[in-house]
Image (cartoon, rainbow, N blue to C red; front, side, top):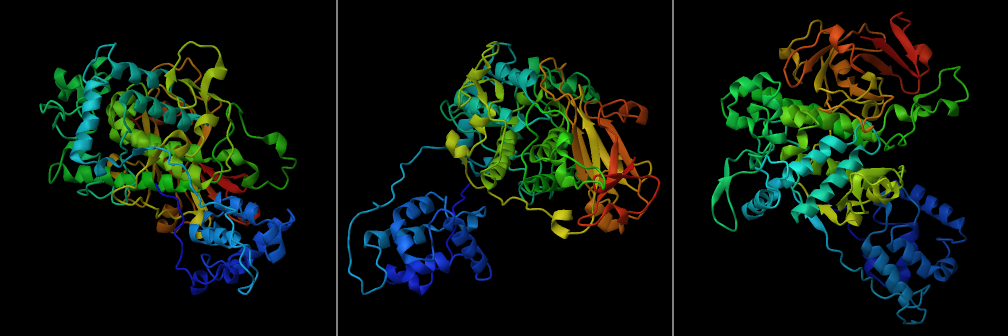
Length: 605
């Protein structure tokens, strides 16, 4: 991942004597589009004048020149929230040369050479580089496989096996539906890499062609499908540990409660299992596989929408919404006053859960998921996309002191399962930072990331439609909730992105075991499916008659739940909600089935 700003073509005056160019760097910055320059320059001058630094006056710039350079080179000035406005390296170097020549005002002024500012020399920091698994050479891939074999003993189901012990940490300690969710899994990856002695390659499920059957990015990577590999040290052909990994206690989730158990041998049951469609190709079950692969675009668009959200999370341990901060309820207050209704981590956890369920069987149960090697490469990409958000929001706020148990140390390099001194544990603050500060970075993906095609309020400025699920909490078992608009009695065949009535999926990945450690937030959270594209395709408006139907399935057994069964579970009933930007709620049609709700109108399913 490279966040350096590429400088635009440099104008001719930049290559002349610095005394002629310095004023223009502050008042006519060439790297910013001409239409934006006046406003940006005025904001720079206005911001710095508050510090008695006047960027449009030579005397002031000269007096503060070294301080100005230091702040520009460290990306702290001019004050801006847009990284594209930062000075490129060529401009700051020109400023340094001008300062060392004596800050001449005109070309005829005498030189006063001195090394007031030495050439910038930033000490290199060694970084572990997480690569796209498709970018690995065969030698690199086989080295990773050998580490899993030799260090982690992936094929060994015995309780003392490092693989079993590491994977059990997830089932017993993982955090979900709360601010610490992503940071807990970041710590888990860091600890795993320390055990392994090498970076985990990521699986880029955000690749732009990942929804196209037959593309190299469709399904799960080939590295997880190969039957064997050649051990780089012994030269022996061995079972591929990325495919043949011992499941929890040596028995896959698929063989405990699923109808798939009838088709699996006892030998198969020893290994983690995934959706069998991933192992098909060509005309073998083509239609079913194509439908499965198409679902990826829905999940990808959910990630794109999450990345657009400016707030990371509701503060850890703060139940409910901040009603006390709202002084009036008449007229209904705008959604902006209810910031915890949607957050980046909540919007992002939804597609995270969807992919877990999509892969199936062991990955679809939190007590089993970490035993599947695909979990680690999958979560490396979860972390990569979060890193994109973190770097785009360097001033975001977090509950810094919240402990990420059972990890200890700022690098999450130790485990402690019974230490009561909470101040010893890794915290959100330790991990809520640029990954390079934690010692690792991401290499670019082989195929560019999908950037989105969803019709949303943010992109269209039009009324947007969503399905909102309130009171979402952890469940013991795993379920998929497929939502439809204006489609009665939906069936499996209707769960298809090509169906304009199909809104999308909300997966609920079960904890697998009773939660007795408070790993899931108790008061429930909100989850949302964007249905704006459906509204556009079907010609719906806020005054249209709309109905919501859902198809709920138990992921493990494949059984369909009846309304009475899923209504007894927390947060399984949704509402269709229109958001009307910049319009009073009074413009909403007065259908008795419509509820006025914080600037939106909601229709219950």
